[in-house]
Amino acid sequence: MEIRDLHYFIEVANHKNFTKAAAAVHLSQTALSKAVKKIETELGVELLDRSMRELKLTDAGQVVYNQALKALSTLDKLPNLLDDLMNLQSGELKLGIPPLIGTLFFPRIAKGFNDLYPNVSLELVEYGAKRIETLVEEDQVDLGIIMLPVNKHKDAFHICPFIEEQFLLYVHESHPFASRQFVTLEQLKDEKFIMFSEEFTLHHRLIQETLRTGFMPNIAYKTSQWDLIIELIAAKLGIGILPESLSKKVTDPSVTTVPIHDELLRWELGVITRKEKYMSFALKELLAFLTSSKDKKQ
Image 1 (cartoon, rainbow, N blue to C red):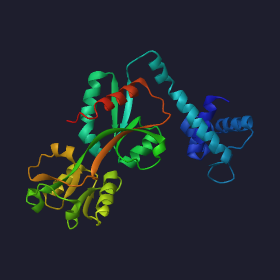
Image 2: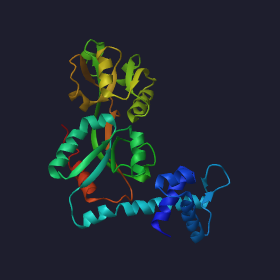
Image 3: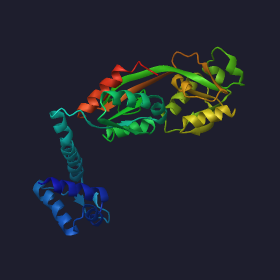
Image 4: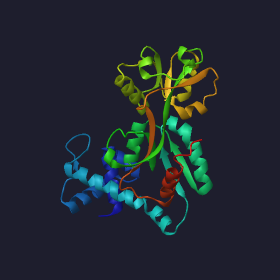
């Protein structure tokens, strides 16, 4: 069985059509069909159900498909393995980070790590925490920094605590709560909330916490942008509950913060990597950097 035949089979499975797959790999349909048939003959099983208009993997085909992906992925990592062998301190890393966390911490991470390893480039991939978990699990990013706890498949990840801090209430300076030394969650039950949208863990976490104290929040606005939340608060359209670190980014003087008296309401972030993932030199050093600097917030 040849590597290129596995590659051709994967393309057929992905496209569910010989014609489209042949165009993708710049091969004739006949040659592509022969390559797949060759694998089937060698393994003694049918990989594709050809009885329907759209090709489908058989049970055996699904097994071969999954293992072929792993095999080709391992081969793709050979350059990194050789770089490590030669101790070349270079490479590229993809970090999956939700937008708010990226805003608050990625500039510091990028600057500090670049000072140590200027030949390692960092690419920021921004999505909500749920999507970041999937990207880490599928090995599409090297690591993620997300709000804890992990949403799903906890056993699939190595988890290292990164930052822990309190949430604050963000209100307009004219709001009755603005002059208080602190507020409780219960006192916010009649307020209009401005929150992140459902794809963000923070959205579900805040609903969970308000329900814990006996009420469902009245959500007036939802957005994926933290700066829009601040602008809406400045326009007196509602209140927001956001991490303490964000207060340093707020430039509108009309928006003020008030501590929330609730020991259970904490913002905990963690660095996640996929278990059994190959750790390149660059990734090992980035994890060490994040671990050593986790308590050094700017």
